Length: 219
Image (cartoon, rainbow, N blue to C red; front, side, top):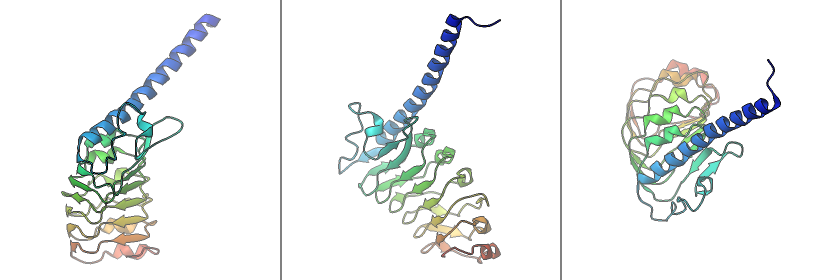
């Protein structure tokens, strides 16, 4: 039986309400994740996060960029600000996040493995901080990752051996960490790789034969 005109209007209104609720709750999850990020910052010498309050929409907070269509956070860029603190695992809830750039701060602790949930991530840039612990082992879940820069930290353990031939990584910079073990053969799968920086690490073993596949890589 065909719906009456009134019933059709009510159905459309309900669909619009549901879609709005979904996007609203998703945007709110970004808002809460940013507040959790701020809560982990113990010192903000330049007052970079003073705009992070309810007087402004979170898309207008310093260092935050949102997409025009869904108003979801796509970029978190807070480099060179002297921030002291640790990284909140709630960053992993920001599902539209494509760029995390936190270069040259004083962030410490481990890199949360929840960041591995960010399937849109293209840039992870955390150099010149004080991060410790191991490199997240779930890097392979970042199919769009292009830049992976963790140099000049205090990371330890082995370099994960889960790089996929489908990866789009062009830069891996892990120099000047306390990394040990060998160079993972799976790096040879990265046909888009252009720069591999491992200077200053305590790596050993042989250079994998798979590296012969890296025709354009500067090592």
